[in-house]
Length: 321
Image (tube, rainbow, N blue to C red; front, side):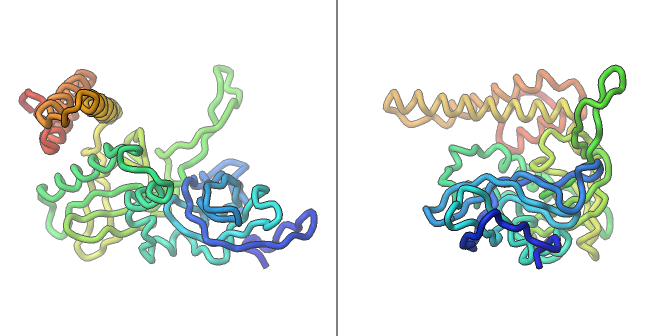
């Protein structure tokens, strides 16, 4: 008996192989809408050996309300040994529910940054290929949390959204005719938070009704300041009033991408000239990029928060907070 009660009958008999695959890309099934429910289809990419060497395979898998996939997890899949390129199927019987995986501190949920790093390493990508802006942003947030006070019985923490389903909403035109659907995270849906208390190992918390109170440009990468109960680690409160607004997030992304691009250009120029990159020059490039990004931020509170983050990273933007 299969995970959904039965297995699809093959068009003709073929031998079936079973192997362990690493999930490279996957998305959670959104809640709401007629297309969501038991047997919902979703795209997934896995790294696996189907008999001709380990490589990336694209496919579509069937998910349920409680079972879906995240990058960095490993799982068993079956494939047609005679036509491995045709499709693969997840052995769902061996995959616990998302709630159970969070309770067991599945590494792909408790530490999504390490999970993504695992995927990049498996694909042969270096830090230079993937960039480090997101990791550095998280490290700055965790360092900031370690310096902040918390109310009695609470601990400062930083949370990352390891996975979130979101809610499907229909978008209409001027005549209110349905045109397409989108997924919003501003309405309650199931999610897993990776909670990081400074000085302690990260852990996962499953929340059946979690919603973002602030628009997030990158929901799965944005470090969220939080408070955690000292007696109940699952009691997590996101401090949405401390989360940068849309403009500040955009400015931070622009600053990070510009600094990385200009740093790479400086390194290439230095290499071409036969010289080693000048650290002072690289620091100046980052500072110039940060100052340009701050021009887009008009909210004083968000501006101060960004300046503090830059300075914590050793980037002097040359203005008072």
